[in-house]
Image (cartoon, rainbow, N blue to C red; front, side, top):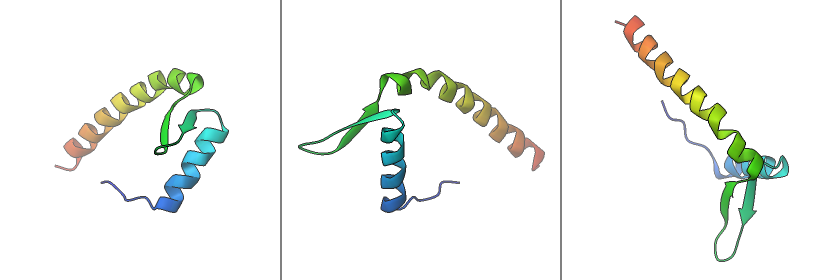
Length: 65
């Protein structure tokens, strides 16, 4: 189930990630974000979490039947 996020919440979270050095904000002509060097190193952790999450969703779907 996807939940919507408000503009205010997204903005607050992006500012926090930038402050913590995980993303880099660039602007003109429009605001864009990219992973910092530290953020890039975190991608492998996210990859493992995605695999676990996908497997857990399959598990939940099987146990509901």
